[in-house]
Length: 100
Image (cartoon, rainbow, N blue to C red; front, top):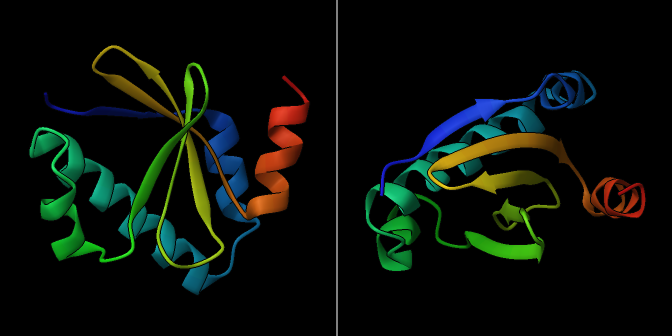
């Protein structure tokens, strides 16, 4: 299943608060998500790009993706569409979920 990734304005705003290295990590996470979906959700293919990649459901329809760092990306799944909502650390993700 191909991935159609879209970015909410909230995602773009959340990037402004991140430093250079954190933005690079977000780029790795987004690349890993593309590989994950392009490979038919094969985790072994993703681990070639990002060895510690994880992808888990927070609560429907929200998912969290990340690598070994503290930076994560929250996405909302709508069929083949993935909408990036937020990039941030664990505490920012918790605040986002509490606001739902």
